[in-house]
Image (cartoon, rainbow, N blue to C red; front, top):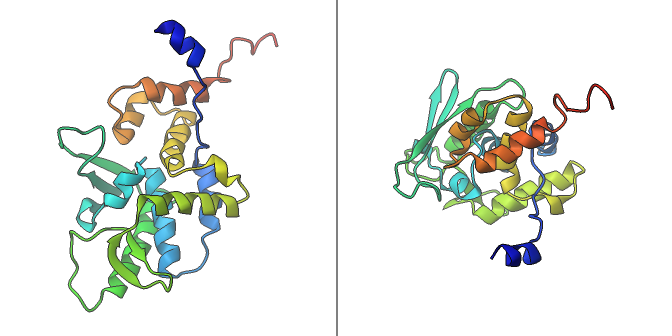
Length: 218
């Protein structure tokens, strides 16, 4: 089996990560104050800040978000790594650069305004699908719409859209956290990986040139 793997092995193709710098560039391309612009900025910011899979992002409901002084608490009710259905709560700091809480509140205000004639439904999707005319629907965004949003805003910011996917938001959080010196265990609190093997890739990539063995003689 080892021989077969050696012959058939193909290097994994990793999509580009939407780290903090890339995300700020992408957010800057979502201009205006329309409901769609507010929603799209919030989707990008929350997707990266909470290291969410696209399926988790579109599954969020209004009741899954709790506002706290320090930022947000986001409840994940189901996940592909949570087979027991225990759920998890992710802390998202308020932030001073990307400001995910402020961007989400702007979208929630637009959502409340569009539904002013009906009582708020806590079980309604947080990120709703909009028609081409920006009319609100009762359906959640699709995970494919998230992927298209990432590619579209990456292209607008001058990046190659073929190297990005919806997973780029999740990878971006881990890449940025590792580069800023976060421990692998604090990263795991947010990403909810069951093991640290995958996370170790991000840490090794961030540490590749840090305290390099050749620094003193190369």
